[in-house]
Amino acid sequence: MALSRKPHRGQDGVSSSEVREFHLPAEAIDSHAHLYFDRFNDDRDEVMERARNAGFVAIINIAVDEETSRQVIQLAMDNEGFCHAVVGVHPTHSGMSADDLKITLAAVEKLCDEHPQQVVGIGEIGLDYYWKEVSRADQERAFIAQLEIARRRKLPVVIHCREAWPDTLEVIETHGDGVVGVFHCFGGTVDEAQRALDLGWYVSFAGNLTYPKAQDLRDAAAIVPLDRLLLETDSPFLAPQPKRGKRNEPVHSLHTPLPR
Image 1 (tube, rainbow, N blue to C red):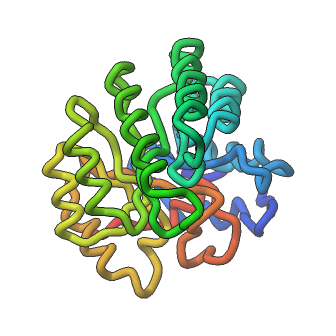
Image 2: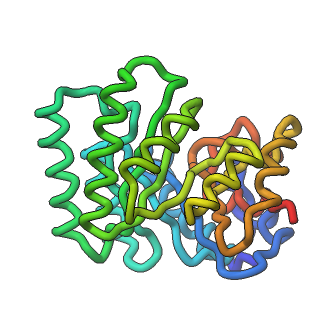
């Protein structure tokens, strides 16, 4: 789908004439973005316009804490029908006392009550063992509690898993009965992708799928059925290889062909 505007080069060098070279196979959704980040303050509306004009029908913005949960809801309210909100506490933001976590998650759950039209999921939640600032115990406590919120609310979850696959899977299998969701920015093996599918869950891939050393990731993507596969940008992170090193945005997913 071509852009209707004259070629325009915005922040980070995105040209509408570039986008004309790509064609979407169907209406597209960026299943995971963070357009509330400060890096979009100067051109957030233009970023969304480029996505619309390229054929995107929705962007799902994912929170990382209580404050950003409110921000993704506001984005959804300001862009009704195009932006949607996923609210929750990221594992690297879960370092707090049990009492503080209870208060925070009560506020997050209240947002689900107050904004049922905007909130479409709980996340991103999970475990992250790459960063060491938050204890594994704190992360697991927040993870389990948010799986319970998702169960009560009958909402899907967005899973963040970094260098923590066995424990993430164990928590889901032990505490995730009745919950379904997506493994965001999947970075695992073929076998791990199959385990996710066996759970009845979805698997989402980002721009790192295009990196030269990511053949294992491409192999994993190749086994995921199209009806269980999602595409995301994780904007502003993980720009695909042609845009690597630049700020990512939804329209850049046109540079991420999925192996079939």
